[in-house]
Amino acid sequence: MLFLRILPCVFWIGSFITIPIYAAFQIPQWTSGNLCRWDFEIYNRAMRSLQAGHDPYRDGIALQDSVHKDGAIRQDSAVSLTYLGTPITLPLLRLLSHLPGWFVAAYWLLYAAAALTQLWVCMQFGEENERIFLALLAPAALFFPGLVQCVIILGGNIAYIIYGLVLLTSLYGWRRGRWGWFYVVVLVVSCSKPTELTLLAIPILSARRQWLPASVTAAAGVAVFAVQALLWPALFHNFLHASDLQFRYNADFGSGPAGVVSMLLYLAHTPYTLVSWIFWIFYVLYAVPLFLLLAYLSRRYFEGAISLKQWIPLLLCGVILLNPRLIEYDFAPITLPMALIVFRQIADGGHRIWQAAIAITLLVAAGYLNNASWFDSKWVECLVLLCVFALGTWRQFDRSPALVAVPAPATVA
Image 1 (cartoon, rainbow, N blue to C red):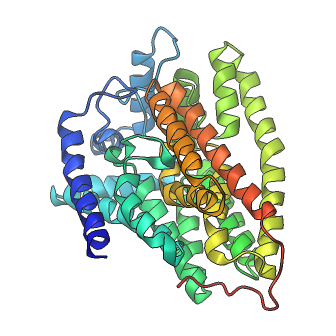
Image 2: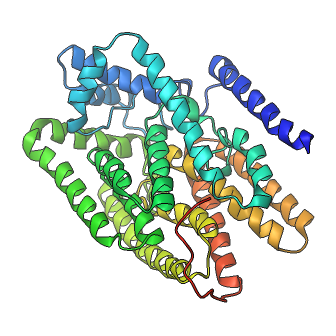
Image 3: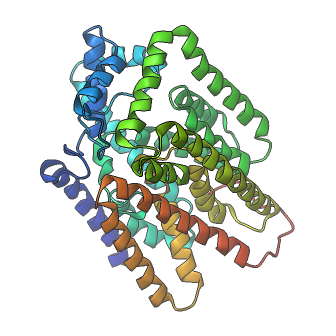
């Protein structure tokens, strides 16, 4: 129908119009400042420190100490956040600081392209009868990372570019069976953020004979991160100290299960050292069973009981949960996969109208709570993801286990 072809275009126009309106008039959300360019300004402060010949970590630490001089735990403040890229990123940041003004425009163009790439890749996992649903939802997904309302896309965090590349190279791997570019992207990213090595579970659990290259990439990523302590000991020490203050001053342990538990304990005045141990103990206690569950489901995929388009949305949600410290940007790339899981449950089950009404009501309530405070947003995001992942897992166990004779091909149409 012509109407259904035009309607997504109308939604996209509305989405593009909404972005500058938010940027110009957005009411401060969670923070003491506007979310627009939030993280990009953190990069700018670091580049200004480097231009002045300073250590950006020391400058950031001094700013944090001045803002939090009373020692109180506050909702996150964009004013006091420190650049937390590892020392290996500083030469590149110093180079970028000397580029002319057009670099800012180039960054935002790349940023926008990466955000749209995330949506385009995830739309490839829809079945024929799900394409219109995804086409209508995609424009709104920009403002609902993890299915809860949040305009964090305006912050300019490089995570959007990272996940755009990760998903694009993953799609290339599923279609062509070649994962080299994926490993390059993950290795480069892990030099600054070792926790992103959990993304290596994607090829391991969705393509054959990937254990060896994934293990080599993981070892290389850990080695490059660790060697920075030897090459730049003072900078690396300050980097760790600045990261530590992010937890101490803002209780920013992330939106993962371990992060939410640690945040609640820390807000209840549990000693910081004890909370740090609890974080990692709790993470191991749920991450190991989670990976084993994903490994079992991946075996069903390799046997042909689950198609690739059915498996990938659930796999991406599970892999994101494996990240020990989820932040808001980590939910953006799985927004459409999460929506697909919910849509398929409603489409396959009875009482569709009631199920849809309940799902919409719960998501509206989650969106309201998500915007109540920065601390509330953490447990709301975590709870929504856990519920959707549990729903997707239950669907796979509930469906008929009948197998086909030939394993499902690792391609996306």
